[in-house]
Image: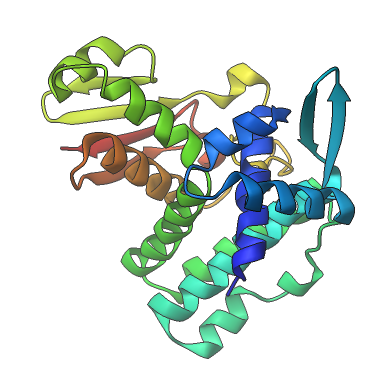
Length: 258
């Protein structure tokens, strides 16, 4: 289980990773439920530990993530996976088998090393756990990721509040937020290739182009999508993974059932 301090570290690093480079005000705005004083002290600690760097330009300070900081994201996700295996599957032997080799993934690990570990972990998960349960494990990993990266959701919530109704919001923002709507179903579509990457998740970008990831992994994204839309719509939704780029499709597509 992560300490409060380390969890805040990871939330700050998520904001930095999302923007590439951020001012102190942007970090504060991205993490609304933490005081500026606490964030300032944590940022100093991050810089001292070498996982973030600070650049001063005139009267403004900019922060960005180092390679060491990017490696912490992988460690966080591995910890989440182990925690949810323990909570949801509840069998120590299965947890140990799925997590085999995780101790070798460190902040210094390369993208390919991290991606290949996750590929193997998903294959072991597929072999040992039924589909419904393993998808639930990964969806909870996605909830955790979304909770740590609230800025994306908060922006969409702020935009939704500019409209008089949910229907008006959905009609107006259909093109802007990358979704289409057919009756009571929203189709969320991602096209990471347009940005020169195979997946928006940095943990699996290092997988070689001739290899695919089990669709089980992409239920983490389904969890993220669920957290996003439940935050925006302020009601429960059901999310279905249609297909994903990492599993060999041309795009990632999720159905959000209202």
